[in-house]
Image 1: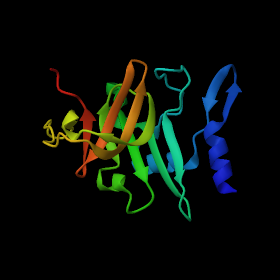
Image 2: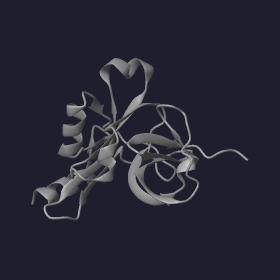
Image 3: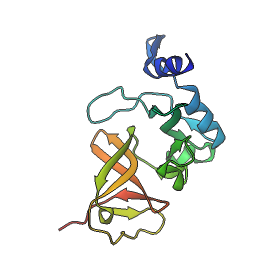
Image 4: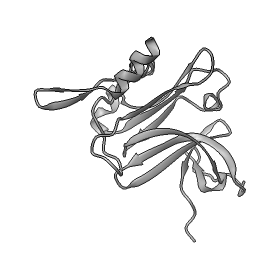
Length: 171
């Protein structure tokens, strides 16, 4: 029953005083609180819509179901700089995303995050902490978050326990 309530909450938007209010699922609020940030609770704009959610919330289909989420939040001390933090959380201890930190900090362009597993080339990604590229040029299954922006799509991947940002080399 709790699963149905959480799924319903992610889809629910209410109108109050002419403004649309997005109801955040409790796990999004709990993870944000644990990371000392305020979840983005308003709709964001992506390449397809003016009203996309600022989070992706799912249950893995195992027994018992485990939560996976990607959500935007702001840190109190960074509000003046208008940077965001992407929280990426998987409840299952052996999930591949658990090898990376739960936060991607200092992001300026946010959209609708979507957790994704896809074949990609690690060399097309730049490690966010060092700016270096991975040497692997063959396709690999990579876990990460696709950020749907108004201007297109952006991707963050968990590579060898570190976050990397999609930045293909220019020919």
